[in-house]
Amino acid sequence: MTEPLDVVRAMYEAIDARDWDGGFALLTDDFEWHEPAQAFHGGKHSGFEEIRQRLEAQLEVFDEFSIEPEEFRVEGQRVAVSVRQRARGGVSGAEVEIRIGHLWTVRGDEIARLDVFAARDEALRALEPERPA
Image 1 (cartoon, one colour):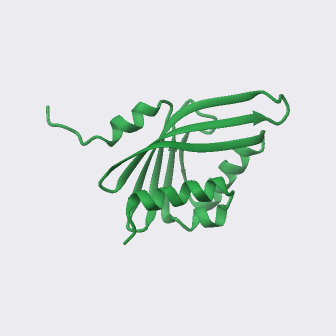
Image 2: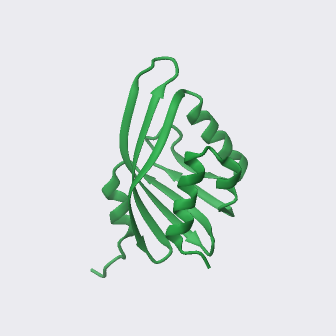
């Protein structure tokens, strides 16, 4: 069995290469993508077709778009990643850079869930096991 960190790294490599088929091959059939409510396409997304449409809608407004993982932390089957996103608007030409957090849940050799956080440290906090009060 592949380690969760290896699966998540393979996903970022597929994203960087714009290899959508390779990226989708890493997802479970019941994969869910959760975005913060205030995000461009906030809420829960599931199913390959909905996710593909969401990606295309997000990317069509940018001439350039990149996701750079900066730090990985693993806890069991979950991987928290500090991410730098850079984009340049297609119409405006404005450049944007944000730092956010991703929390990936891996099941076997596939990714079952992605939670996106508006702040990097939120993903790291979500990774920590809950402690009894």
